[in-house]
Amino acid sequence: MSLPEHRQYAILGTGALGGFYGACLQRAGLSVHFLLHHDYELVHKSGLIIDSKNGNFTLPEVNAYKDVHKMPPCDVVIVSLKTTQNHLLPQLLPPVLKKTGVVLVLQNGLGMEGTVAAIVGEQRVLGGLCFLCSHKIGAGHICHSDYGAIKLGELDATAGITKRMQQIASDFERAQISIQMVDNLLLARWQKLIWNIPFNGLSVILNASTAEIMAHAESRTLVEQVMQEVARAAKSCHCLISDEFMRKMLVNTDKMIDYKTSMKCDYDAGHPMEIDAIFGNVLRRVHIELPMISMLYRQLKFLEHAKTIS
Image (spheres, rainbow, N blue to C red):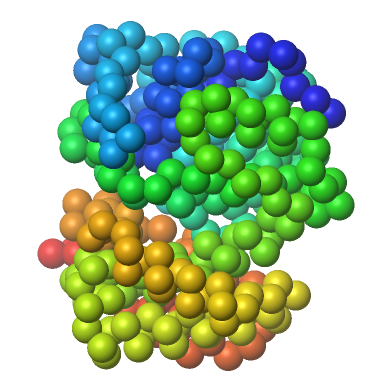
């Protein structure tokens, strides 16, 4: 299945990730429609502001909506909501997805594509792994501080590199976003978890940024040990992650700017954290002992509960 020559995009979740990628697509000339909640009034009136390491830009006019039923049906619907809002997807997806359209899931964690497939069907779902450092400065104002590349794959493990993957990749490359197409989305998910599990979890528990974690010998050792446990979990799901890949993740983190993870941002703001998507789904899927991941999961659950009742 291929997509039309002139593709319309919908962004469900115009936050630090969806807002950045959607703005880049619109700047490149694509038709993009943004669903917003808290930021709707300001973005509808004044557009989006992007402060980027690759050059700042402003979109004074965007197609902004606060009601999905007022959005046009689109060829590619990008799900960039926090996974804590995925209970809304059965109401959000059907009105905005063309009958011939596809859903691209740009979310953290494991098993998110399956949640979407239960709504729209497995053959209409792709997944993307975003390697992006960005955060919101204010309403409609996003700061992109580092990276930005996406790994893109089909949910159907037998599909290989499809025509529609190539079409979507070409749109992102036109928007100056680096894309790597992969034929094993599950492996790509586990590779992202190699970073997400230790750094998201430890950043909250240790109240530390990435640079602070990497600078201290004991916390750095913790990162390495958790990475090894994630690799064992991946292997139990027939996804092999090499020691060399893990070393590369550490080197890349050493090189990147000091960064506060998305989970730490959510915790500091008093928002729900993506604990189940990143940690819980791993523990539910993998049937081997994972003591470090289990401990991180329970610590994060305690901290979230304590902050809720404080």
